[in-house]
Image 1 (cartoon, rainbow, N blue to C red):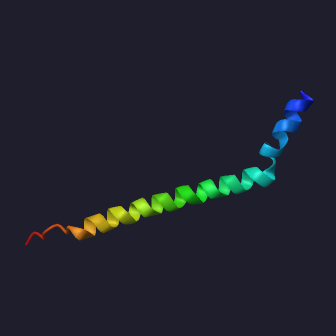
Image 2 (image 1 turned 90 degrees about the vertical axis):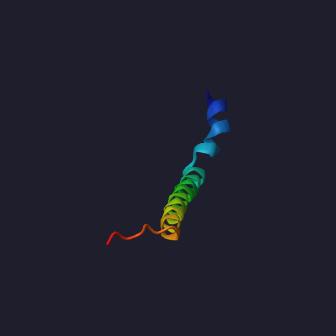
Image 3 (image 1 turned 180 degrees about the vertical axis):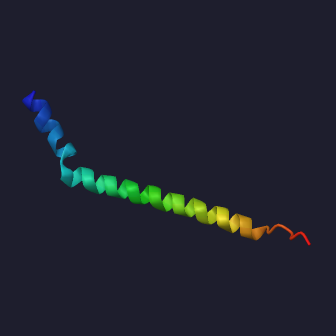
Amino acid sequence: MNVIFFMTHPIFTPYYIIPIDMLSLWTLLFATLDLRNERAAGSAAFPQPANA
């Protein structure tokens, strides 16, 4: 049991987990923002004709 703990402990310390979580969060955030910008740019490229 001790061997398993000491082999896996460095992987699960906050020094590794928190930066990995933050990088994942920022990556997902910017990916969703980029998708929103692409949708907005796509709808602006082909405006719908106005009904008179």
